[in-house]
Length: 379
Image (cartoon, rainbow, N blue to C red):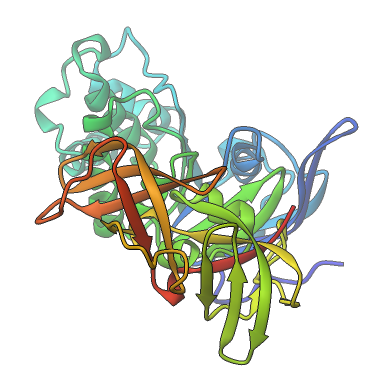
């Protein structure tokens, strides 16, 4: 049974599942997208994010479920009858046409009057800051310029939603960063709903209003970049978004203010009083920590401090002794790999400004704050 979308919803995905024969690509997904939102579908290869985008575009059809856009059910409509446009990984520009004709192609197919076509082509070329390139052929443009033209060709049709399938995957790092800013500028100026597929965590964090994290066809968490980074719903999200140190620990004591955890060479205090499951569809888990339980403590590298060796390290809560395996100067931060105990290798990132630099083989102390420790159920 399905329900009509809420008037506040722009795009509503209701109980959508997609199977290819006996293989399930998308488990049941329910998702609401707000009008004008920049929403990213994030996850590793094969997680189902592109399949979901293709169902919105009409290139694939749900096995079950409904997709509404402004209250209209899109399921069954062919791609050319949907008020959406897609920008693909490959730009698919016609090599024999100049840039203006490439952009105008869809409008000509729709039999839009010539004066209107010329006006709209000029508008989008100005929007993507490519006014001087209208007469050139695609082969005369750089990768970044071709991508801008692919965006212009999609936007000229004035879609209600713009779907972007990893459009920056072919660009080098510098161009990717430039195009991230360009996309954010376009989104802010147009107010169009953008749905963006990427496997790049930094890209999703930098650009999105909200992120949908997917794994094996299942939505793991939906939220702002800050919420997902600071409060991951499960161990997969914690490990996939940014870097994370996972440390096996035993729960020693649990109280209303937090818990005490014991690793092989340190004692940890955490204000987390719930253990979160290793996998979950949505939300934070509610499996209470139990004394004697085996769990994983998770600490972000940037929450680690690397200090002069201290004989009390490992005995004072939230400290541990260690030996520097490697150090790398990365400009704004120094990145350390520190061996702490028998098997634990801890990644730490400390601000480079004013930092005491430790070299390979130096004995150091690690420390971190109580609120830096998240806890997840062991696998």
